[in-house]
Image (tube, rainbow, N blue to C red; front, side, top):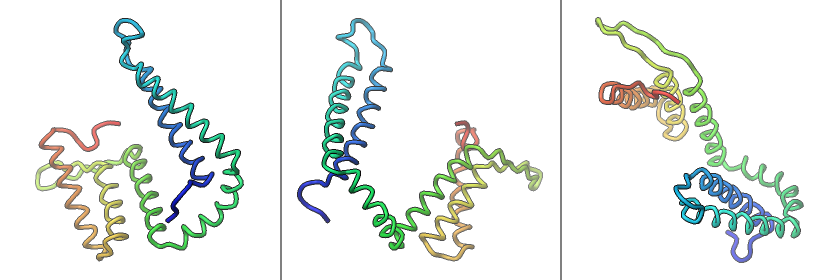
Length: 178
């Protein structure tokens, strides 16, 4: 773990994150309604704070660029990727991130539903349930390392309990809308 002064690349990364937060604060403050005069606007203080934070992050970023952050970035990308790929926990974390992104996209855009008649009842299974069971079972298999059958059973139980609670408790199918 490094102690002491930050490297130019760390300063550049900090400047980018701070600029994004400042821009979000400015954007949200401009969306607030102005009830009377500009001096009483509820978004005035967040606007001023966001603007000053944006100016400071730009100064930090320019200083980092002058100190060689781009050279450090170019030299360090290859080393960072190699170091990342040699660590099994980081590879599993990257796989988890990819699975979560795929899960969100599949649930949002997959128009799959199954209608099953079971013992005189109509059982409707949504895309949320199908995709959730598959993804949660895969994630459990990666991190829990139990048998695939146990992972699938736990995933089915968890997803169905949640789906049934929403279906009969709140009278809506998970997820209702996006």
